[in-house]
Image (cartoon, rainbow over all chains, first blue to last red; front, side, top):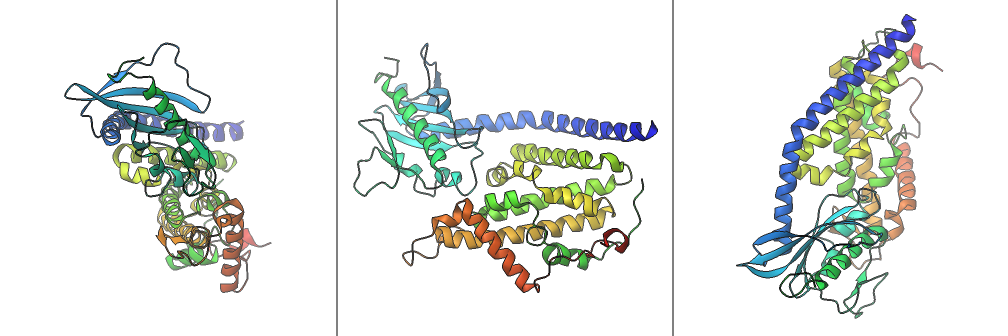
Length: 201
Length: 220
């Protein structure tokens, strides 16, 4: 009996101890992490839509549906400067290679031009998926200053001189390439649903 | 049960064992999953290696301190819980107070739980020796892992992307072999580096009488 009881009790004690430590760490870091997330959101908004200095959250219209690739359109923010509508910031969680998704903040001017993309938290494969999300690489730059007349198209090995709405996917990171592409396409669709004054059509 | 008192190995032996003789990746072939997954670029290999080293040092210390308390029958679950606890704490602390480091290493941290080097060092070293040698063992085993990842990722990045630490090396000389940064290239580079390591160290795999073991325990 003792031989069964003692290991069980010690294991229980270790589990309880680790649980208490984790609970304390979680409680202690929670407000700091929340503060950082809020600061990060504010920084992301002004980075992707530099032309605006005030942002207000815009409620999505009733029955608004995202497709299967986009897990959520997290929030849409209207950007204004001196009270004038300058563009929207769309925060989207897009399905990548990992279930956690890729958090993207996308800025679009009031004319529907992509003004910036900022990559937030994600768990994509280092070296493959991260190539897509790295600002120093070529992939994200393809979207900047883009105002496509038609839907964006993700292609493999884009030929030189192909129209700019064709986005060249990254080898070895097809899924992550698609995650960014879907989110930007979703953001473009949202901006097209807005009037030049920044109201839903 | 109480553990047999072994002579504590010297710091020098611990260092040689961790870096070369019993290199966890290249000699013991432990922790293959993160090795194959993150060695696509040198920066990634180095980040993963250093993050693992930090957690390995902490977990070795904790397990060594608790070595008289943990009963043999439940040692494996105990080690796993302690390691997973450390990884989670490191994850939250980085997120809260070291956001820059979190951006650089955050994606590797959850992978550490699944790294069997930690469990192996807990079982083979920390459970038998005092906290300070265990800390050293964690440091050098971690550095051995880092060294292996660094070498493998150097091979893969230069051949697969034509860059090293993101610096363009082979521009226009030849087209990079993309295969090397894809999964098959991981196995190829891993095999090549193991071969090189065995060649350099006279082709012997770690003998049963290894530096950190006693004759009674390890004799075949």
